[in-house]
Image (cartoon, rainbow, N blue to C red):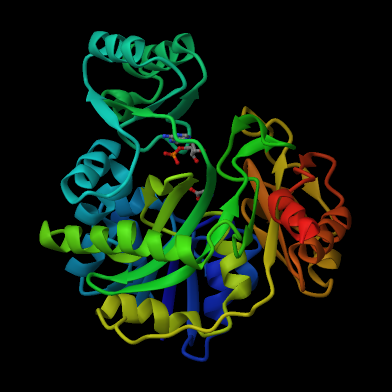
Length: 427
Ligand code: AMP
Ligand code: GLY
């Protein structure tokens, strides 16, 4: 088969790495990819939001199957456009991608189908939002309706902070149209986890759990990011919690989307808070997590291509996957300044040495090559990923590889996996 992966991050590098290893893969393209991805795929420069251009590439390269990485082209309808051109793709239609693309749709959908999530209210009028927040008190959470690159959520500790978030989104227009409508919801207390399931419109195949680290600083301090590191499996998602996530969130969602005429096909990424009263949905994403995808791909023993195809073809029923039992852990190296402003083009050395270490893969998230120099090309730049017999061992291997990389312009958290390592120590 000739495959095309759409996207350019660490997630897409991990997907390309896994797909390239499949005996079914005869040729692999990535649009647009990055310097690391170009080692396993032919990179084609294109803006993923230029849907015409992506469809044209798929046609020109006689692609049999497209795997879409990021949410923005899914929400914009890339899979619908590919289907109209007769090209098979992994990922939801625009109508199904609304689970991630619109918080208001997602919250109303959960209410219609009895899916456990935080109590909420929707607002298009800032004064009504302010009154609601004053009445509810803090802590409280303010979310823009639309996609805002992970920056549209404020977990407010005080009423003043929540009011400032309303001001920023609805009056200041900080998120453009995405912030014209907001959702204000109750604060959920507990431990967060990312749960994944492949979905073919009707059937569900659990695809593992991971724990991300969203805050930029050690000890979960500082502003939120796209994710500074992850590990899988996530001990907080034990067998009982997994069963509840599947029975109370994933299956009702898949059935509800089908019943509403928006069948979901692709990977459903369930952001959950494991509270004292059980798992509650924080958010749906309609694609793999980044960097969660990197650890999942390291743990997957089975060929990924038949699984993605089975989802796209509606034949996941009875499908099975095998996983390595060893945990995997990924440390994101980001450009100094991220998630604020940062320079591009700072030189990175030592990636080959790091990648050659035992049970280590260095996935590139934003790099480019200039001659024989490797340069940073974004905020999150590398995802240094390792496996080990324990999370502590995977962590030690990942940080040994991080330390082999010479990048004065970069930084990383030094405590990725701390919850799981503490659990291992406690026995
Ligand atoms: P979201 O983009 O909806 O995942 O929100 C970003 C982050 O904000 C989540 O990963 C959580 O850490 C936090 N968050 C979102 N909603 C809530 C909530 N209702 N209660 C507590 N934390 C939340
Ligand atoms: N790491 C979280 C996400 O991909 O949304």
